[in-house]
Image (cartoon, rainbow, N blue to C red):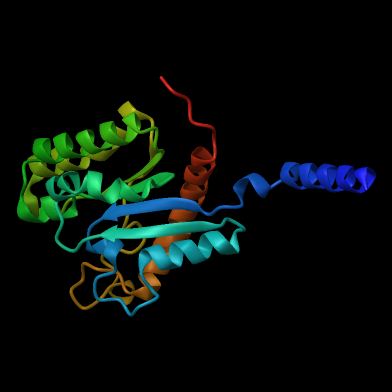
Length: 215
């Protein structure tokens, strides 16, 4: 009997050491953003978070993406609800905020201050981040365009987070890929966003799987 128990014990150790079992639990990703994250106007099941989670699964990555997108949210709104949004203790965060700031004409310095505060809070919690950028409408004037468009690359460069420069890359201004309002992608548009962003999200997951170091 002793030999049998020894065999069972050794078998359990081998199973625990098997490659991949350390990642048995899904990687928890919080998608904190606006209507672009929430899925405004989209049929259920075609939202950004749903399509991204499915794409990760196809790539062999088990992830659970929490859709924390709120239509109309500004960077200030995102900062105000950050602690509540982090209550589920995500392993990583996709940060998509600022588009509504731009639409409201919020001073870019204010948007940058809010995003910087969010990134600082996430860094303090040792939470890997993918910062998703936005570009401003060109009719807001060259000064505003220059100031707003510079926010995201500057923050990404200073903080070293993963960075996707423009969420609507390949989708903006294409009627076939947007809803009637011309601002929100349709399901096909979301599919393109997910495909283009997927390689960076994979790097985000890899970062989330690294052991966290205390400072």
